[in-house]
Length: 275
Image (cartoon, rainbow, N blue to C red; front, side, top):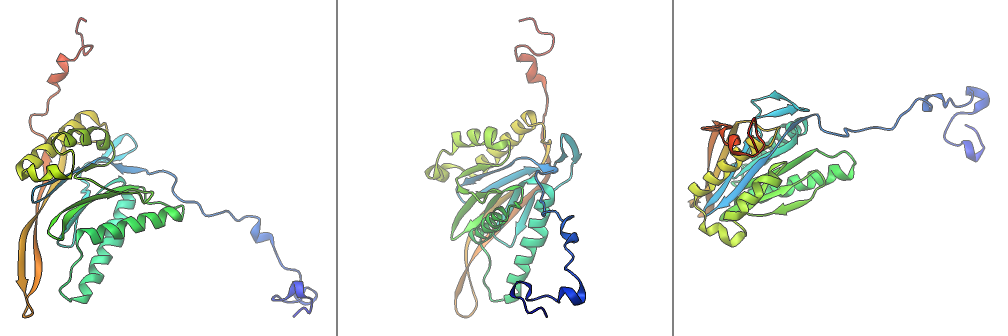
């Protein structure tokens, strides 16, 4: 080896030749996705007295092209949680199939009677999103986590920056501008949740999906809905361990009824009207 300190750690030039730096000239820094390609739009969710209702349409758009019309953007995670995702569809598949499925499988390995509640799933996802943001390689999604936690309904959101937020009425994408004002008329704060029945919550979410179909160019008239409700507490095992019972009701491939553009005839400036 070369006895000169500046050359320590590599063979001597006079024996092996000088170090070849040419490979560095063609190197480029690693680059990540700068914008989503195939995207899904709004996810809408609302708490009610005894549970949460969440819905998302089945469209994945390639730019402005309605490319895929059978994409399921809601996923049940464990027994207590439903996750809805808007944004990039490939990142959504990574979250669902690589992260959440692996998380549930590892949890099942323990077989100790414990389970992941909605708040556990939410905290895990929020930290994953923040970690990816810190790596300057974000997952281009906004996620709603709805479920049952500690005897009460749970609803919260996290976005690609790792920003977390909880509210009785939440929506992603264009729904954040159109659906949330409609939902907050009926449920302005957490105290109003006690006065909202399951039927009323489903009706409000259905109305939001209808408005979004009319107003959001990236939405579809076919959507899926999940209703998560608590069914009390059951005692299991000889030690009297208590475990919450949760029911998730799925309604898939719902099509908007009586969809019509006849209302546009009454809008000033539409068609051949005389103003």
